[in-house]
Length: 430
Ligand SMILES: *Cc1c(COP(=O)(O)O)cnc(C)c1O
Ligand SMILES: [Zn+2]
View 1: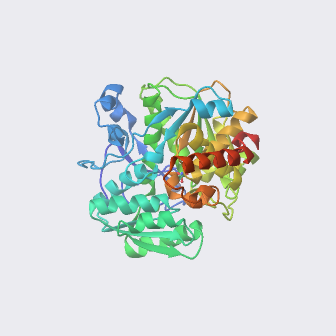
View 2 (view 1 turned 90 degrees about the horizontal axis):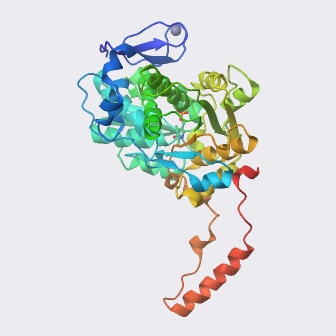
View 3 (view 1 turned 60 degrees about the horizontal axis):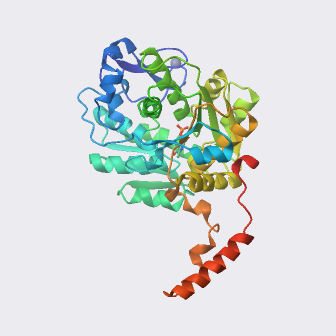
């Protein structure tokens, strides 16, 4: 249950103690989160623009900066999702250099969690776990179930009982063992810590968490490479546990240290739902801690009331001169709709949060109109269609007879209806 790497190992964020490579969720001495520390000098020659360009079109092109055990043969082509110039959305919200990083189409399960799971499971295999699992707000469950199936490892997944039906179905289809817990994510996560010890399961976001979290760095590497090895001015990123936003920063810093990009300040902006906003509250208050909240929002994938990396994320955001905002459930739905009708991207509730927060930050003037801003869209709208329930009366409209005259009459009817329909409020208008 331990292996050696000369390039990376576990290190405590607080006391600096090192632990080699083994399954461990936090520092046994001071209970602080653990981080993977790299000897970047050893990576220097192996991680260049050229070596990256020669790699496969997926996250494994960055393997030299991932905690991957020696001899690991990557199998799944995860990641390398599109970075799109969002001209239409930009026009709507008043920004000229807006980009969307679109992990709504991440392979294999349509969220950025595929990145973290593939790195975690590489380590789970090396550590010899026969069963892997996770506590999940939905997307992680889908990804662990799918990737465990492909690797032929058993999966046991714990979720809050009230998750979206699509996310439950998208876990069960892979034949994973799924346990609905009568409680919210924070209850589920606490239980998982006990289960991991008692049953020797490899929980990707508990005892494998430091390895898991490193997978998120690939979002940052991809953004920099896709911008032509340049860093943006601003990142807008949704936050649940607060891990992804921190790891994008870590990725940028590594690229600067290794000389792949020019050093420049990047401001980080966090996005949450008001119904679960412990990190955005912390940033707004200027705290270096978070006050846990009881989640109540349709953005279930972000509904973590006591985020593990919350304090660190809050400090990081404040340190870069960024900010955090949170939006209501109504604004989240408008955000989903707005991204879909301007850019043709259907995102889940978390993406609605990011879109609405981006609009607000531009409106507030916290993000400059001409600055290069990347909004990170992390999940797919097909998984949270219930958030849009009741919005489209068409779903149960009558069927039209297959005749040109009936079609024409129907169009007229529709046009009449559209003219009466109130305009959707742009997300920035709140
Ligand atoms: C998990 C998740 C996040 C947030 O990730 P953290 O690293 O926990 O902050 C954002 N968006 C979606 C869709 C997610 O599933
Ligand atoms: Zn410690």
